[in-house]
Image 1 (cartoon, rainbow, N blue to C red):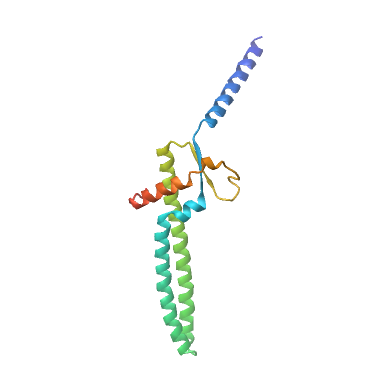
Image 2: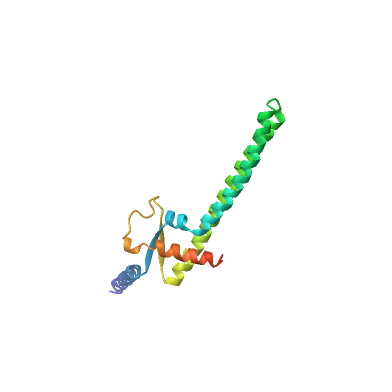
Length: 161
């Protein structure tokens, strides 16, 4: 009898724990954002894209000036090599800046979403990125625009946590 009693008690405890977990999940506040939309509408992205385009413009002006000399002095191998080196270094610089800026943008977005979630009482905020993480979600749970507005306001106030 004592062994059956412990089995029944264990079963009840497991059932109660399972019911609590399900109840907690069903009553938690959840939302999702469309990652690409948040990324595209983040105002910090526009600023960093402007910086990158300025670097590209400066690099292109240097390349164009050097190309004029290369064309003028077709037999000067040193100038042609200098042009090739400048072209490669410009491309590497632009790729590095682009990667760094993208990383900075996502850091700002993720930090902003974390603060938004905490401030608004969300238990979960999922990111829908089209990679299979979320294949369907009820549009009523789409908080993309709220998050975009929040992170842009936060960014414009100069909050960089």
